[in-house]
Length: 483
Image (cartoon, rainbow, N blue to C red; front, side, top):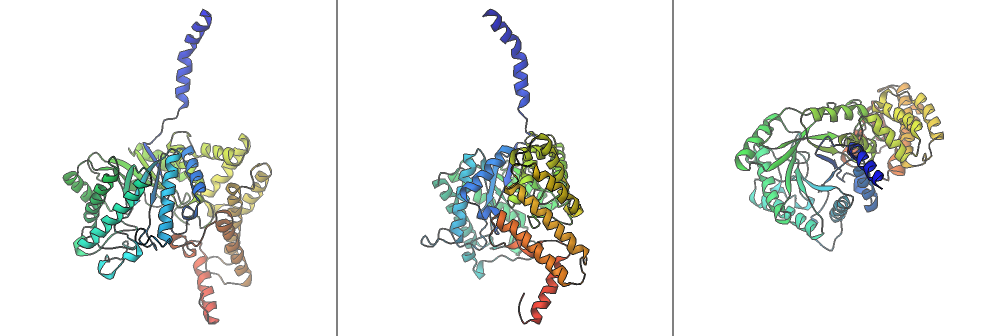
């Protein structure tokens, strides 16, 4: 007995450090998945249990917070007519279900706002903002007293309903533009008009959630706007802004050096919705699933060195699911490289052993630069991988099978005429096959509904699209039709 006790005590110093070493230390304090459901993306159409599973998996890879935006585009006032259950009410109930699901899987919740973007039935001519350029949306001018009251009432009702529904909101976050802004003289400079409006909304939120925190997103901010905001916040509301998620320009991997309010934590707004390169763009799932193993690894490790402590990943659907795993897996410290994440991803979802998962990691990585992939070789390698992949019929595998088919067709279209070549029957048939495969991904695998705004076909970015669309338009006009 005594020998057993002594042996146990002797082993304890070795056991405890080993256990502690197995617990990874996150590289960042907050690892948020910002996943707004709108424009016909996957989040907008996802069922309650689908979304809960999505958030559970995000938590598995290392996310700690969920952020969502109630985009009022095309939506009528949720609380105006209780008898009518339209798009606005359906969208709002979905938001509440998703916030509830996030809490259930262990994520904190952040409510994201674009303050002067309002319901479509509130857009009366006398209320409208002056828009243009980067200022767009269903916007009203908050410098008009009656409009400001309307905006504040909108948010008071939303926060009250969230609270009454038993949903916890831990933080607010807010965008300056996209959507947002007003170019009128009274709202100039917009950054300060916007900041004051956010303060009033924050005070309303505190009535319902006393411990709520205020964050901001630096998407499309200019350096001088950062300076104005910092000076105003330090003077008027010191300590109010807890963090600002700074804008990383497309194709870059770091945040700008700008002035922040005193005590404000440095955050980063990480776009996980496109591949490694800025151009040619593989963006928003137009060309199937995306992956950015090089860009995201470089970005996250670089942000850590620059003193960034808060992360907010911008996602528009499950097309970027692999990037979610890379983003959260690296940020949480669970994995040391993108390749390690991809190996773990294949093991978890494809049911493969270690060596096959390593082969999958290599195959997936090449799609960080999809326009450079030799699709003939890639499809030959894929065929061998599928033969030893137990879960080859799942969506997570089949979306990559179809992506290879899609890019194979794209390359054939380019070989038969380039970007501006003659539209022969052969080329037109290839384009029809291209759209059919794309539809298999969007409808057959992802179950997407009507695509709107940035998800519409005209944003696809393939070199031949503009020429093809022009040809089809001219053909339709000759037939006396509209294309």
